[in-house]
Length: 267
Image (cartoon, rainbow, N blue to C red; front, side, top):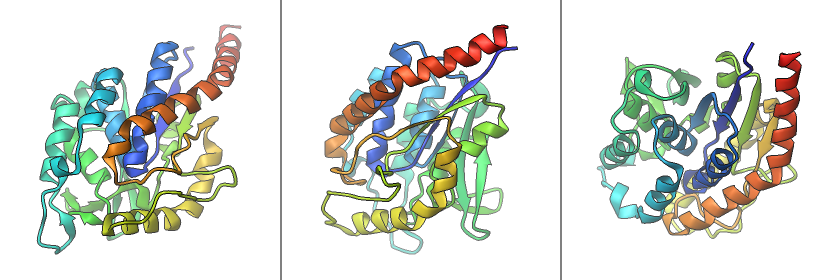
């Protein structure tokens, strides 16, 4: 019986671009990714990978993004930004595919703001699901899907390990860009704008709720993004590099543990 390896990518705004670096290392080393899940920025990177977007192209794309590309200002009724430009970027990165057209199974997590519960997407309109998952409260307009008003997945689950467990993953690699060695949040980046204030506030609120999910991962990769803002695309390449460094540090562990599981199955 074939054992399945799952990769789950957490939230983090632009810090989450470190996920690209992690993917680059796993792909280079031929680590099999049988399924993938993500929340917020992690959902975007996971969806792009599942849709077949090359990981090297992801890095080049990330380095070319500016805030002006996604900032479509909105009369602040439910969010500062409409999110239409972000939706177009999502469609571009996912090749306008739906869940049914993806290369590997994908789970995207958003939050029902009325019920305060996570919503997991595994089928239907991929771009809309990802757009919902990145809807940072106060920054992006929420997304309404099937009567539910949805915001950022990180509000309820910044690292949705349980989604992959439900999908049958036997070994789960989690990537979290917000945790430090003591399991708390720290940042060296200056708080300069309303976007930074909102992002940092969400990080503080979600951190304690995430500890159970962090513990559920079989292997946890934690890129050091403390020096970077979660809203600044100018440090995209640095964040990607931190992802590569963190993945390299866990590579031997992943290979050894996955080999042990595979041998156990063969016997």
